[in-house]
Image (tube, rainbow, N blue to C red; front, top):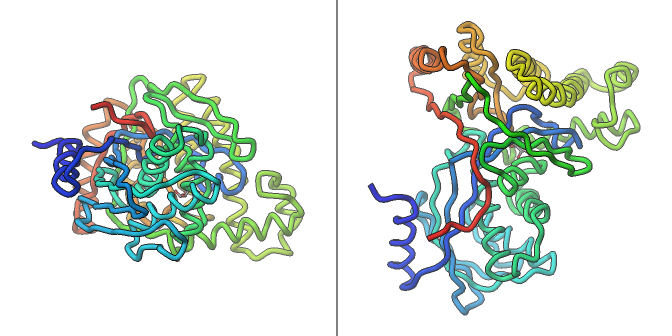
Length: 381
Ligand code: GLA
């Protein structure tokens, strides 16, 4: 079978009559630390072996011409603010171009063809993979790599904010740009200090179970969750929930809505859980890691209310079977669970999760073993 790379090469050549340069970036998982990034807390992601790959070449015009193999659509747009394309997928690329320009960087007209195998709407950040692939490529092609990696991540994040309607934090773009094979990264989203953690859980595997319930963060309650957190922080007189603890929250209980109270309670708990998981990992205590994952699921489901029936069901199946840890992953409202499964349970868990889910919801979930891989990069020919 033709590889993704060969397919992109072939179609690029057919459409544009020349060859370009290949770049790729990755989707991500997050072991723990969900909805903490925009609260200045900690996250613990890693890039995965699911990528968006693009071939690009300068075209000597002031236009971008780009073809998406998977969507089978072509878009052409200029580089001024009023040139924004209408297709949703093309707005990500347009946003990256504009955000580079706004920061004083250079973007000239180029041709591009791209494809990917990051499942869409599964909570694996296909959009961050697309953004960081193009941000990395345009930095390399037109800016001598003068834009640093944090700025590349911010360019992706600003694209979500300004062109795609999602008021997201920095985690996905950070993971996608900084990802390193066999390493997770703990990022402090306030100081932006980060640390690579070698991740090789002996005797365990990370398994994603994708419910294939689609989520769309734009116009979704995602932005409203963020507003709840900001409201509570304001009420507590702190910059963000990073600076709050349970005593402060309880003292303000009468002044905030019950819903906002629950949202903040989850975030305050999750801040600590990331640190606990890092300690547990350092000590090789996977049982503790797993317990924290279940606690996160509980919080995301009951307090933060970003789970759904299908994901709660998958979490229950994992728990019943004695899976070490399991939780909903990513922004929520669909997508997948991430599971820490001991090797001896791995095959049985997958079989049973698939059978029981299908019995109840009529379709099979998609299973992925996670392989922690590199993030944004130039693809060697
Ligand atoms: C989405 C956002 C991230 C983060 C997660 C939840 O993936 O893009 O910034 O907030 O949800 O942890």
